[in-house]
Every structure is written in C-alpha cells, then in structure tokens.
Image (tube, rainbow, N blue to C red; front, side, top):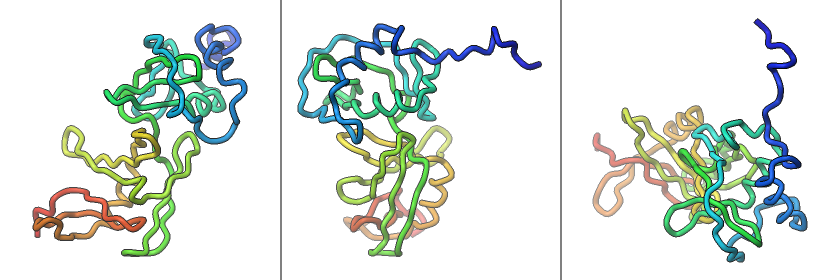
Length: 204
C-alpha cells in the first residue's frame, strides 16, 4: 500500500536546522567548490565523534537517516581525512570530528580500461565522482571477505580507499595473470605501470 503524504516525508537532514551540519557547512563556506579540500594542511582541534556513518555500500547516514542530498555528501566527502591511528574524520579549518565508516569511505562504481599488458590503463569513478587512474600512487589492493569472496580496494587519496563494486571485481579478475615475484608465483594485473597483486597463485 502506498504511503500517505504524512508518512512519506523526506527525512534527509536539513543543514539549516541541524546545528552540527550547519556548523560544518559554515566552516567550509569560503572553500573552492571543486576537488578535495587541503585537509592535510589543517590542524584543528578534535571535537569528538558525531553521528555520521558511511555504510558499506557508500550511503551516508546522519542520526540514522540517509543523507539524500548529493551535494552535501560530496561536500563532506571532500573533507575526509584518514588519521595515523586509522580513524577517519571530517576536518574543517576550525575543527575535526570523528565519524563511523563500515568498510571504506568511497565506492568505485565505474571503470574504464584502455590498452593491454604493460600498456594497460585503468581508471575508476567513485560514488562521489572522484576520477582515479590506477598506478603506483593509486594502487589496487585485494583482500578476502568472510566466505572467501575477493574484495578489491583502490587508493583514492591520503590513505582513503574505495571499495570496488562486485561487478567490477569480476572484470578485474578476468584481467589477472600469473607472475613470479620474489621467487613466488602471484596472480595479479598490470595497470598504470605497476603490477597489482591479487593472491598467491596456488596452481602454479
């Protein structure tokens, strides 16, 4: 049964009425609108955690409700910073606050491949429209999830990673080849002038 207008209200947080989001937005008012902010240059005080969570599928939540305004999500994604202890924070020139990240802060949702072998170039688009070309500065790493499923991650910037979607994972695995590294055979793929290890090649 369709929800009535009273029950189908948009629960997206409103930065004008939420003091936490309004405060963060005000601190960023004078920043350029495109690209990540220079969070590595800022050293504001840590003001504790806030109730923002990035789910494993890349959805942002505030106070338990999804943030549906893409512009707001992109703004907050541009001020993410990974700390030396592994914590991920939102950082402005005047404060930093802790958030919860279930898996990775970004998701890689589109992939473009050009060339083969040593000339192969692979580029990804993230869910917040970062465009990242795989290479020595933006490597792929592969982990195993529970049950043995393969989970590739792409380094976006500053120790912030993007989880590659399952559909794109299959495409990456199709490009895998075996190579001996340090006397041990590895499955991996060549991209951007680097060989990205997937897993030891037990069949070699």
